[in-house]
Length: 362
Image (tube, rainbow, N blue to C red; front, side):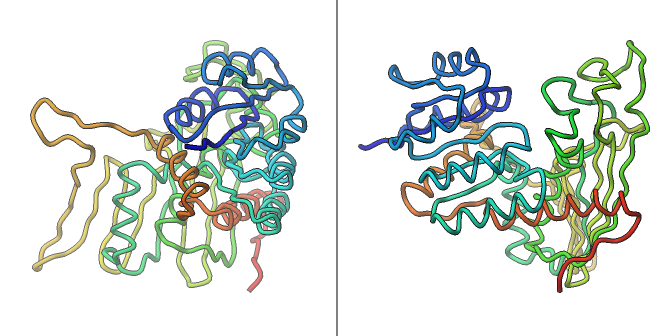
């Protein structure tokens, strides 16, 4: 069987934490090229996951010049997503790009247009769609069990978990803080469940209230940060009205004095029922004159002493991408959908900066 040859651009934490172990489990794929501006990272990736003859690069353009590479994963800071993805598509490669799609909506639009122009597949790594609770709820939504979903909340709230490594705190490299980092996951889940990608207007607020804390004993999950390097927001909130009148409240934070926390979760309210992911997946409604709450049993368990074969969301994400290349099956995360997520995130930032709503074209 002919195998796809895959290149990895960016061999940092997300590569080792998700993409490399996931792709390594797909028998039709071989990891044949690795690129990172820090050569030791690429060498480590090759040693742990690559073929014996895998190439190592510090310049991604050299990797893309290899005509034998069929697909690449772009796993770099947000400001590099667009130029690297567009270059890869134009070099004839299929692309999985880490979330968010891009730093700006203009860049995301250029990525989408490049995929359309080249005919190559482009997907964005929103792996939370592949969680068991998300897959179950998506099926319930598609079957109309909630009716018309007209109000939703997208939750991405951490009490004190500011990432203190890499470029997460760098506004120039990332384009923002928790909103573009984890808020993007929650918004993507919510829009996907609603099957609604037509925003009408957005109102946003962005805060930097805790970022300047210089307490070395700060109770942050990832240790104290340097306020001089913390150039993004610590929390951001959006109010999104869709063209059909539906409303979405988007909440995101890395640091917020609250106990009401939850990340990459959604709450949905429809005409026939509702659902939330606050305490596991719960679906609520009315039946036979009474209210009910269902908590589906998720996972492969069900027989004594057997817990089933767990497949991680990252593995499912990779499997879907490579099935789309090899078998022509549909992508789950479409570039057009991810573009709308980026457009809404940008509108939150723009509204916060101007103090005015941001309207989308009718």
